[in-house]
Length: 85
Image (cartoon, rainbow, N blue to C red; front, side):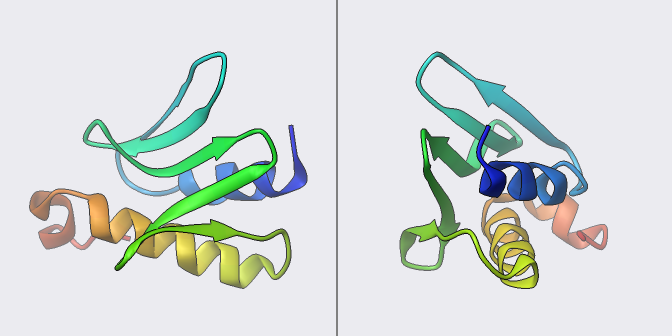
């Protein structure tokens, strides 16, 4: 497991109704069955306003913000209305 994946996992699994899914090629974090983070080897991407954005291993606060924003863009309205994160 990469260091960035460990950081992403720690943040993502704190968010409401997040599940981790994996196959032999990719790890993904999903809310309501839809991925908002996907990890393929050393590449970690998070859902952004304009598509998917690659995350770099660095500032933990930046990683946390981007993962949380990806969740917000993907989560169903019932979770956002309930207060979200």
